[in-house]
Image 1 (tube, rainbow, N blue to C red):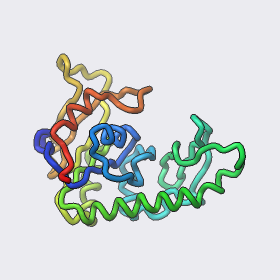
Image 2: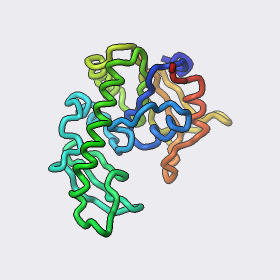
Image 3: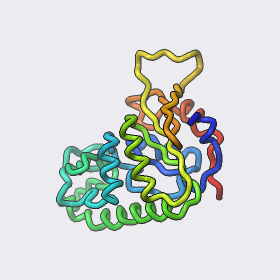
Image 4: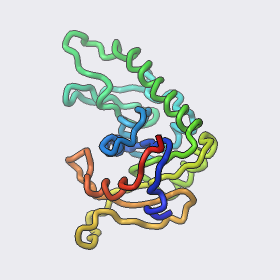
Length: 215
């Protein structure tokens, strides 16, 4: 699919990671109706994403799979060693409560709500746009086969990767499109802003302008 083909209203737009960049940019365009389980996780490998979806998020962020890796910006960095993903915003450091595990029950309830919301929307929305940053061709093919088992309505996928630093685009162009010849999939590449987790606003403007929520 070409980018212009996915620019239309959708009942729901959903981030599939792999960084907070996607959820942030959806917020900037008022396209995010709810917080999903992937929105604020770092889940870089698309095959791990596919595994979580195939398993219905079973055991994702389960306490027995969690390991503290660091303390940063007032939060614990917590790794799920089963799905190899990171949470950096869910467990605040509290000097009065030394045991981070004591916060898990509250997190677990919140996380279950995110999962429930995800499945409610993908099973009840007539049209959905999924956006995933960090993809491979075979991984996206596998992802579509998994989504086909869950999604009741129509859907498209905006599949993104970061541009190779060696690729020079024409003047003032921030996005590189490429036809992967996959049904319902639009592939494009965007600049890697590296130290700026929010991403390149100009590139995302190009991607998201023309996409809206059919309220």
